Length: 358
Image 1 (cartoon, rainbow, N blue to C red):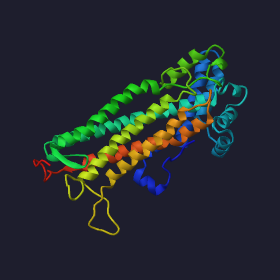
Image 2: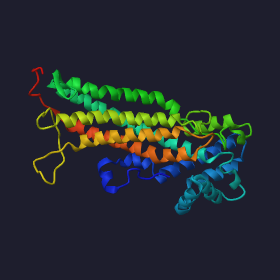
Image 3: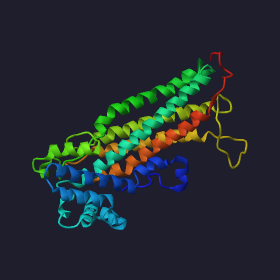
Image 4: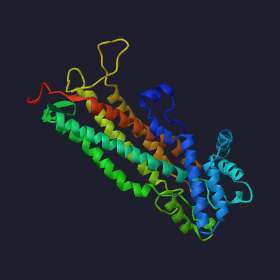
C-alpha cells in the first residue's frame, strides 16, 4: 500500500500535496478496499449468491474493521498484494458461519483495482476543481493586466510586440483543453474491475455480468469487462497528469524568464531568498513548476512500462503502477497549488522593449 509518495519531510514542504497524498495513504486504500468488499457482498446477496445474513455481517465487519497493520504489511511482503491477508482478517471479523462468503469468487486484483478507481474518482474531482480555479484566476489577471504591452520572444530572442493577454491565452487554452479531455476520459476510467481469478468471471457461476453491473451501481462506477491486464485506462490517466504538469511547467518557465531582472515583465508577490546574496528574490514557485513537469514527464515513461503485462496477470507491471502513479498524482496536485499562488500574486509590467521591433 502506498503512503506519502514524495516522502522526505523537508522536500514535501516544497513539492508535496497533502490532500493528494492522503488519497494514496494506507488508510485511504484500506477504506476503499473495504468499501468494495462490502458492496460485493451486498451485490452477491441481491443475486442470491450468498445469504442476506452473510451480507449483513460482512458489511458490519467492514464498517467496524480494526486492521492488524503489521500483519497486513507482512502479508503484502509475502504475497505481493495485501488482499489475501486482508481477507483472512476480515473473515475472522465476520466469523462463522458466514466467513466463507467474504470475497466470494473475487480475486485480489478486483479489490485493489476497484479501490484505486474509487480513489481516482476523488482525485479527478479535486484536480479538475483546482484547474477551474486556476483558469478563473488567470482570466481575472487577463482582465486586469491584459492590455499591458510586452515583447514576444521566439527562440529566446526578441520578436515582435504583443500584450499580456496574448501571453495569458497560451496558458489558459491548454488548461481548458485538459479539462475537456478529462471529462471525456472519465467514463472510460471510472469503471469497476471484476473478473475473478483469470478475468472471465467464471467463478461467479453465470452471475458474472449481472454481479458486475450490480456492484458498479452500488459503487457509483461504470460497468466494464474485466481489464486485469489491459492497463490503458491507467496509462491514459497518467498521460493526462503529465500533460497538466507540462502545461504548468510552461507557465512556470515563462514566469521565471519574465521575472529576470534584465527583463522585468512580471513582478511576483514574493520570492525565495539566498544565503549568500540578500538582494536576490528567486522565483521559487515558478522553478518548482518546471521541476515537477520534468519529473512527471520522466515518470510517465516508467508508468507506461506497466502496459506490458504478461498473459492474464502481471505482478511486475502492477507493482510498477503502485510505485509511480501516486507520485505523478501528487506532483500534479502540487503543481496546481503552486500555479495558483503565482496567478494570485503576479503582476505584468510594461516591457521596456514594447513597440520596438528586434
